Structure formats: C-alpha cells, structure tokens
Length: 297
Ligand SMILES: [Zn+2]
Image (tube, rainbow, N blue to C red; front, top):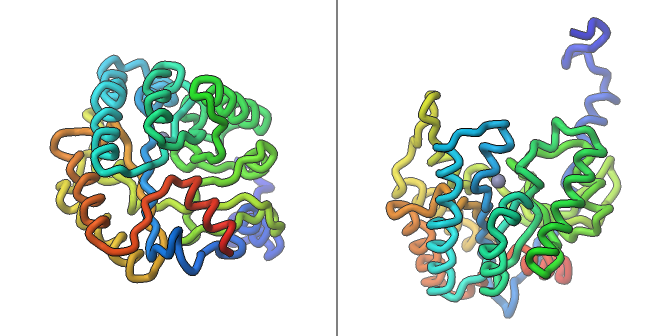
C-alpha cells in the first residue's frame, strides 16, 4: 500500500477528469444510410483465440489446449461453411500465435474474402504490460499477420478488450484505421486521446453481444455456461431487431472454440437467415463498415 495514494473519493476534480479523458468517445460516425441505401449494417466477427487463452494465463493444461485446437479443427471450418453458404463476409481477429500455429487457416479465411485483424500476440493483457512491451507486441503481431496472410491488417481488437492508457497511441502510430474493443456507443465513433481527436475509428463491441459471456466454462471453478443456446439467440436477435429499427449497426463477437459446436453453430446461421429476411440489410466486414462510416459522416 502506498500511504500517499489518495482514495478515489479524495481525488481532486482535475485528477478524476484526467482519468476519464485518457481515451473517450468523440464525434459520432453514424451514417444516415448504409451501402446502396441499406437500412442496417450487420458486422459479424470471430475471435480465433484457440490455444492462446491458456498460454496467456501461463497454463500448460493439455486438456484446455485441446479445446483451443478444436477452434481450428472444427470451429473455424463450421463458421466458414455457414458464411459461405449465405454469401456473408465477416472479420476474424487473430492472435499472432494462433496465426503461427495455423497459417493455412488464416490463408483460407483471406481466400474466402474475409478480413483478418490484429488480436494481440498471445492474447496478452495490455493493461498489465509496460508501454514498450505492449508496443513491440502490437507491431510484431501486425507484421506476423501480414507475412502469413499477405494482407496488412487495418484494424485491431485488443485481446479480452483490455486497453491500457498507451493502447490507442500505439494503434494510431501503426496507422490502423480502426479499433474494435471499446463500448461507448452502438454506432462507430472517433476516438479521443486526452481530449484530442485521433482519426482512429471505434467500431464498438459489447459483452452482451459476445458468446463467451454466456457459454464459458471452467471445470475446476464455479464458472458454468448459464444460458441455453436458444436464449443467447434471443438476446442477439433482439439486439439486431433494435439496430434494424434504428437504422444502425448490429455488431457481434463469436469465438470458434466456443460457438463452433453442433448445438450452438445454428445460432449464427439462424441469425444470418433472420437478418436476411429483412429488406435493406448490408452484411459487411468491420473494415467495410468503418470505411463507409468515415466516408459518409
Ligand atoms: Zn480473444
């Protein structure tokens, strides 16, 4: 304990304001309409964490690593088949270690017309890293993905959506077009760094629209999946319904090693079918959504 450290309720106004101002939402980038006059944009994303969650935690559990490998052997192929069947393009956020373990998977994702974005080196937690380590890992991750995929990533989703006070400056320095890790809105917005516009666009996520929240499980702790798949579908569907009504953006995060199961993969397919049953729905990658929002705001 640092005896000189002030308790939160003792902080002077300038100090709590400075904390809040580090990284904030700036101007909204909500277009009046989407591509070709579409009413609603649907941006599906898949975080191909595979073995990296276990490795990040310093774990060496053969059992948990095998669950990660399922993401490559069964999860990604099932997802790609659904997307291909419906002609939908999506975004995959891939830790560099996943890409090194499974380069062919990444090349298939790119060959089938999807986007690959940065998702850390080994799914590290940015907020516990010294600035230089975070910067070096983020740069190395983008270079590794580019080398394997042949395409330079234009977006980043930080692992576990964890964000240090340095993350945004590093993202801007790398020239990335967008981040997709923060939650200040349902529409795209420009990120501010200490009150100044950065030019980096946020395509916001939310735990509500993330399969891991509902399905995660830990054998040796109290964590169990607490939602039947039909209820998870219902939440995602209601998020889409409201986005459609508002003429906004429906963004979703899924994980191949979590949703790529026989009893769950239908959620993705049914959501696509349901969205498709509406007029004026534009399915796009995160990069396409951000480019459109930037050009029309
Ligand atoms: Zn992840």
